[in-house]
Image (cartoon, rainbow, N blue to C red; front, side, top):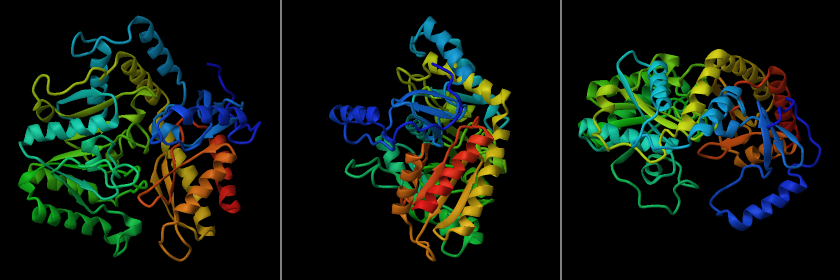
Length: 443
């Protein structure tokens, strides 16, 4: 890996000829169900910059969907993972264990909310973590039902597809799905029928009523929620909703699971998004930003709940791979040394300042929201709240042609989401925002 100069540089059109040639090769052998946001092929990456096969350097406002929060090729991640790679790549922790798995679990016990005794189990992906959290909650409570929220996203396995709200493209044609999953309204301030000020109280009351009427709280093993919804549109519930929900779960003996796969590890300006209101989940699922780009995920929570699953009930051949564990320890080192929660808060101030001005000048921007370096704008037809997915796609495409990688999301496909690396400089962030403003002006 060469250290890349942290700058945007375009030497061909985007995508360039070499990337287009590679994309033709891709289409001949890669399944159609694997989509591509931007068909440029990356040959190197460093910090907040991607180098493609044609020599273009792109600013990365996606971070591999909130994965490379510490930047691409972070020194601590690369060093620790490389050293481990030279020693051994795998033994299977369930057969012959190794210290790095234990060290990651110790770090999770220290960093996650709550001052009680904790246990963790490590897996490969966010979907695996969510699925295992549900298994653990069912084993502990001896109940079956799981409650999830509208606009939520939890993965693409059979159980997590059932937990996910959006049909296309995640669930369409893939059923039947796992039973005993119940969906309730999300406190979505921008689209709450009686206005944002009522969203917290009314959504909480509706949730309790629907659960009692449709399921019975005594039958519910777990309530599962993203503290800030990711794929659903970076929906930030209003203050009071999450604490109220957690308190009610505690009263009813329901395991409260926070899905922090996209929002965790400094992304929102705290170590975890639930920290914003001091919410302490019973279980917390993590992945994405945990290991600087290496595949690792975890379920962490109260010892008595985590230990409800008997020996052999949890696991997986690759779960907690030693190279990934060392990468995670390197990523956590960087997060602490560079105080990345504080850096995320600075990114929030910089981004919201620019995007709020954009919204004031452009009636197509219905809402600007988010926390830390997890920021979004929701696009609508002017004078309405009718989603404008075509505009979101057009703005994203224009940004891509100018060398800035941004992503869309949202139940209606009308949300632009920004997930810059937490090590992106103020100057590069400013430059990227200027490109985004230019894209709005051009479409």
